[in-house]
Length: 305
Image (tube, rainbow, N blue to C red; front, side, top):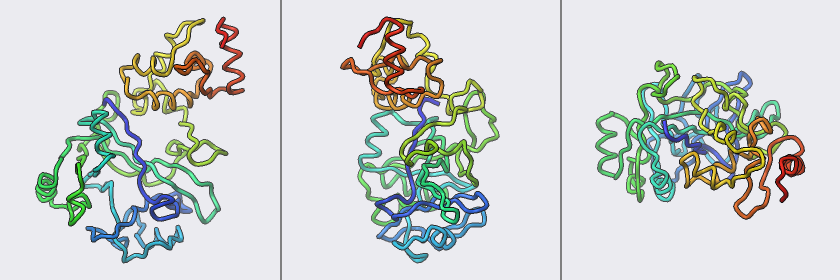
C-alpha cells in the first residue's frame, strides 16, 4: 500500500444540503448526492443494514430530493462489489499523485445524529483498496457488463465524463500485518469514535485523528505518517515541511504533510516543533500551548526565530 486517499462523498452543503444521519441505534448510512440526469439508482432503491432510502431522507429531513429522485450512488460498496468512479479534474489529480493498484481510499462525509441534536461531524463510512483501474467510456461499459452491474460513470450521459475512470476494489485487503480475511472494500455499519475525524468541541472541518491511527500496531492500516522520520531531526535543528515531504519520498505532498504534522497527537515526544515553514515562520503546533509552546521549545534547543 503506497497511498491512502481520504475522499469526501455523500450529501454536503451544496449537494443535498443536510448531513447524512447517525441513527439512534448507532447505524450509519451515507446519503449519495442527487443527480439530475437518469441514473441506475433512485433514492427509493437504496437499502443497507435494515435502512431504506426512504428512512435516510426522513431521518435527515432532506427537502431537496424525494424517494423518486435519481442519486449518484458512488462509491458503490456492497457485499458483492466495490466500485468507485472519478472523472474530470478529480481524476487528473489522482493520476498526478500516481494513485493506482494497492492504494486505499477511505470515504468520509458529513454526518449528524439528528434525534439527539448531535454535533456536525466528518465521519469515515467506507473503504476500497484498488485492484485495478478501468479508464475510458468503452472500457468502463464493457467492464460493468462483464461484472453484471451498473454504475453512474457507465450509464447514460455520465458515461461521457471527460477523463472517466473506475477504481475496482480488491476481493481481500492486501497489506502486511493485516488480517487477509478482511474484504478489500465495504462500509462501516455503525458509528465509532475511531471513525470520527472531527476533533471534539470543534467545527466539523477541524480534524484530530484518533491516537490509535498512529500506533505502531501492525494491524492498523492508517499507520502511514512517518513519525520516525521526525525523530531523526536532531535537537538544535529544524526542517521545513517541504524537507519532510522529500524525506518520506512524497515531494508533491507538502500540504498533506503539513496538515498531518499539524495534527500530531504525540507532541512534543515526536518533535514536530522542529518543523517550520520554508520562509522561516513557525507554522502550526498541535501540542498544548500552541505556537507559544513551539517557540519556547525551539528557544530551549538554541533556535531563535
